[in-house]
Length: 194
Image 1: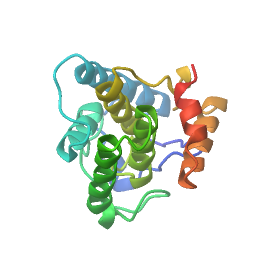
Image 2: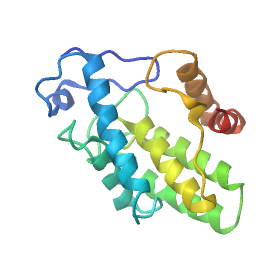
Image 3: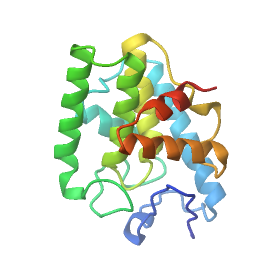
């Protein structure tokens, strides 16, 4: 299978590609559809029952596993290779613990609005890039779970596909890059747009 990567996407290395579970998938479109079905089931699972805490490391890994468990053998497992973005893979565990500690403090001291806390949480999960692939989709679901815990609502995410190449994805990537420079206003605007 030949993978196609839109701007801002993380390429899958050959070892990771060998972890594809559905043997019938041979086209990028088929992979996208298969992953989307897996993610929809995980989203229903996450919001339809008592669940774990988005501030818990084990739960963060469990959600990724649930999102991709029918698609990738490495679902829920930390990456062990360098990517086009993200921290060095050897620093993932430390950076994740730091991020969770920062988020806990932001919640406890009400440093920002709940939406901004969840936006910063989302941005940092993407920036750490815990997994071989699916980090943006995973971070979006995790941010929604956190915001739901904080104020019983979810983000709008521009109300469209952020996987497909287009203006919506370009605006999302630009907002994430603004967050890299500690400017979260574009990301907050994007997250609330519908």
